[in-house]
Image (cartoon, rainbow, N blue to C red; front, side, top):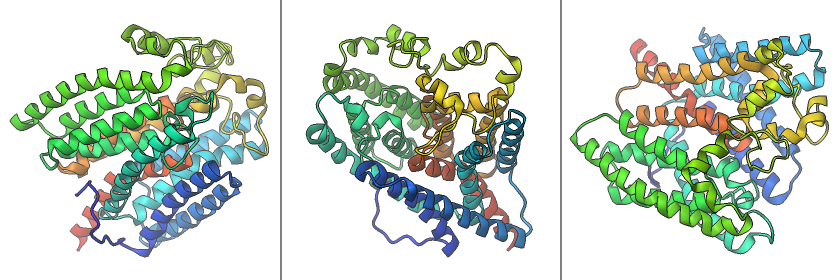
Amino acid sequence: MNLTISWKKLYVSSSNARWVLFVMAYFIIAQTLVIDFNLNRIILYFGDILNVFVFLKALYNRRLNNKGLVIPELFMLVFIVLGIIISLVQKVSPLLIFWGVRNNAGMFLFFYSCVTFFKRSDYKIIFRWLAILFWISLPLAMIEVMFLAKSGQWTGDMTGGIIFGAGGASGFLNVVISFYLAYVAVRFFKQEVKFSYFLFCILSSAYIAALGEIRVFFIEIILIIVFAAIFSGTNRNTVFRVLISLIVLIALMYGMTDIFIAYNASQHTNYASSFLLSNFFNNAISIQGYNGLGGGELNRLSGIGQLMSGVMNENVISQTFGFGLGSAEFNNFFSSPFYRTYSYLSYQWFSDLWMFIEMGFVGIFIYLTIFVSSFRKVNHVMKKSIERAFTKVGILLMILLFIYNVSLRDYSTAYFLFSLLALPYVVAKNKISKEIL
């Protein structure tokens, strides 16, 4: 599977698969129009209609062919049903329950459609567009920083590639650079990409990360290189390539720090000190918020503990089941009582904290089981290939993103991520079909 850009004509496997791809593309385009051109968010809701339409087609197809649910779909169903039950017990308003279901189930419905209609060949199209988005993001990020940055505006809060103003670390730009680099890294360790191209992609992604102030990329690039090497298989050539990559990575860390500081330190007096290893760790577990300003907002790694002792007041029932699906929701038209009271916590910037508030530890456990199930399925149905190694690296990155931001809920990224999560089940379905034939 060629992960670099190729202009060879690729054909969608079916008209139904074309509909699934259209839903994914629509959400990215719509999010771009909303953020870049300030269009009304109602265009995003048309995407919901499209998503439900394709899901209904998939549901009819499954019933027609007597196909049941795969394991992740069972957990998705349990997650939604349990969330509704908890909401009813907690007396959450029907409107908020509907909105909570909509924001969580949309990706589940899309996963169902991917498994039903996609074939393995359709992922070549997705990977090609990911490569295109990566290389478009490099000049766009440079233009945004050099010519479009506003005075007094934190650079990374505006730099977003095609989604200008969303913030690189917030989702789309981070997903594009980390997942494309994972593609290339796997191919490098499989000896299908030259070291020069691999190095160029590393340097380009690091530079984009600096422009977008994506500090989590320090963690992501280590995970990508280490796990891409592990999942690609071990042999002499792989070991040699790992050693070369580690040397490059160590040198890159020093260079990345300087670039990050050069573009962002002028806007924060203590910015440079955050790259010291001790400060990096202390900031991650601080109870003074993710930016250390002590405004009451939650931090990524200490947030659940603060919610348990603060908002939930050590209540075991609340910690276990949360306050109900939709109880912490908000939008431009309405907001929940919880959001109106606790919006200063900024929980809405982190998927795990948001989910913990609404579904507690049980909800988080069920949700993460979806990813674990797909990860295990990869080993059972996919041979030692580029796709297998990349999918496993991708799922690990998704679990990191679950803690880091809301990429798994965001329109521009979640549908791509859940399509990748569906890949092992698409492969399994295709194998069964071949055996029947």
